[in-house]
Image (cartoon, rainbow, N blue to C red):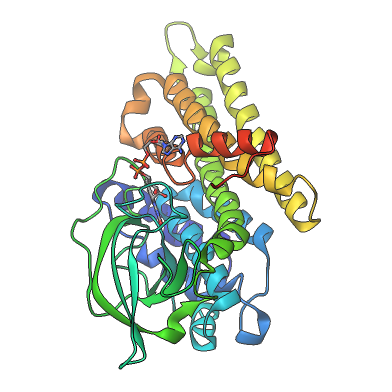
Length: 371
Ligand SMILES: Cc1cc2nc3c(=O)[nH]c(=O)nc-3n(C[C@H](O)[C@H](O)[C@H](O)COP(=O)(O)OP(=O)(O)OC[C@H]3O[C@@H](n4cnc5c(N)ncnc54)[C@H](O)[C@@H]3O)c2cc1C
């Protein structure tokens, strides 16, 4: 299996219901993508990667998200972490990511600062006699928690001014624990559990970027990657719901009238709204990518808007799917209710939809986004 399409057909799709029902981490999907060299999509060619950009990653996350939202989100977070490591991390880990041997993720959100991911309250204290740094934290959510080979981790700075510092924390670091298994409403396989760090020692060289430079990396690298790739994952979920709803109403018949559900104009109008809203999101993601690639003046606005729009439209489209497919949608086999549940997470994944509206409003009125 070398292409993402064959991995989706042979590995991801067949396991999607099991991943959802039992909250199984999609390890088989990540292993297959790794073996095919696809986890190194964003890695530079000189470390053995594919040297592709955000557009290619967005296409792949959408494709995977269409088959399985949990796998799409795990892949999304891997690419977000990998993009930071690619820019600031050590060569051996970059090579491992490129070779598909290393899955990473973001561990930014904290119990203390909640959805304000840019403002960690966790600490990083220098241990000069060891040349190490001691990390203590209560991370509230991290996709692939307990499963990833590393975490792109935030803390307060060690000595510098600034809001945060980023670290590469290996998954097997002594002092990490995962107190509660993830048992969420949707994206049930993404293993988005809390992580507690107690006296985790990392070498100072595990710092990603400069001490106090975390905020700039979050805004310049993490935010555009997460906004586009997260949106692409939810676009996949919307696409799946739209296709399944159209297929269901086309084949489902009312025997007493000889009609299909698709013969009802109301049903067709709902389907049309699903298709239109899904395509609106696809268009906005493409325009965001165009804006980023050409460094357009409105690139930052598009980056903020894209996930806010998906935050409204993914729940709407999947809810329409539930309506169009009627009682059948409540059962697992049509597959719509999985997408409906998976889509709900978009509004609460930070930056949450409400935070994004606040940022967009501030940008429109010339106010600083963070004060
Ligand atoms: C499936 C899933 C996967 C995740 N994966 C990761 C991951 O890999 N890495 C990671 O770091 N985090 C991850 N998160 C965490 C996520 O990014 C958020 O931090 C988390 O969902 C916020 O939840 P909370 O309950 O703490 O929000 P709260 O901060 O308690 O927010 C509650 C409500 O208040 C609103 N609110 C808060 N501040 C403002 C404001 N200033 N203006 C207006 N409204 C505001 C919010 O919009 C929200 O509606 C994940 C979350 C989910 C659901």
